[in-house]
Image (cartoon, rainbow, N blue to C red; front, side, top):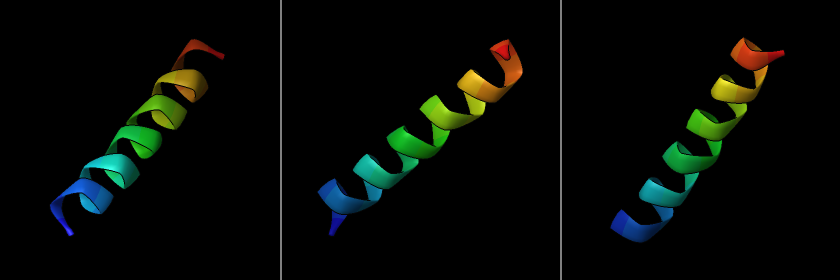
Length: 22
């Protein structure tokens, strides 16, 4: 469960950074 949660958070963070950087 921890690995899946970390993976989802990582993808969400990368997506957020992508939106901020445009």
